[in-house]
Length: 196
Image (cartoon, one colour):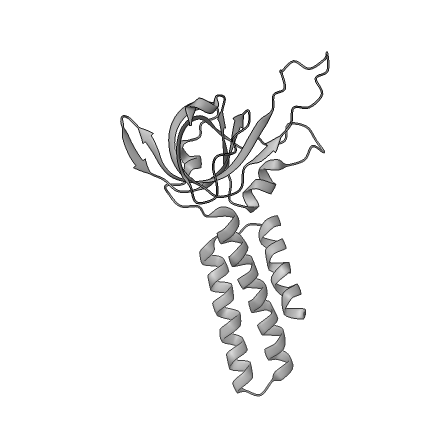
């Protein structure tokens, strides 16, 4: 239990004060080497404290690798600030989820529609007439009902690619941080079912 708390503290430290991978590796190596030396010198309390601090550093390293490091070919590298239409090959990663249209208010400026959300793992993107391998996960939102895709199916579609929006107002939910935890940094929007 104490080790889990130490690892959680490392995650929290990296979240508040992000350090680079070499610094976390150096701290981990230093404290684990000191733990080994204290164990050989028969100093159990000192060894226990050093082991916990080493676990803290490993927790920070793990968090930094999961939160900040992404492959060079990640799909988000092609997402610009503006919505851009891209051609994508992907594998369906989750069961399609239908989202019914919300009640339309006279004050709404955007028309609400029924939509289907599908989690996909992106394999390739068309750039300049040829397919280029990419990696990453994203949510594909399609207007209308799309039920004929199951997890593991390969799909090809044209969709608008955009980064996940950051909160615009104080106190607003941070969906970008939540999606980053699942390593989804961008989203795809397909207006027409026929584009799949």
